[in-house]
Amino acid sequence: MEQLKSVNAGGSTIFSGQTAFQGYAGPVLHTERLKLVPIRPCDYEPYRAFIMSDRARYIGGPFEDEGKAWRTFASMIGHWHMRGFGLGTLNL
Image (cartoon, rainbow, N blue to C red; front, side):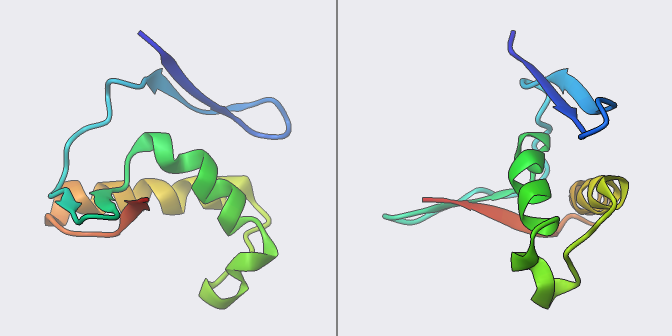
């Protein structure tokens, strides 16, 4: 089974695990052109790249601390599990 691993610039492991452990936490919405899915662990790398870049300046970023990026991301996943709703990602 494919392994998922995220390592920060200093070489420390932020997250590791099997990609099969994505944890269904909410609805998946489909249209002709896109799919909206709850945030999953495999979405961390694109999120980290975005939130630590200048493109995130209008939503509270950019984050300079990768630990803060990880905690914020993990809280978004946890929100689905604890509250039953939360943010999602678009797949075109």
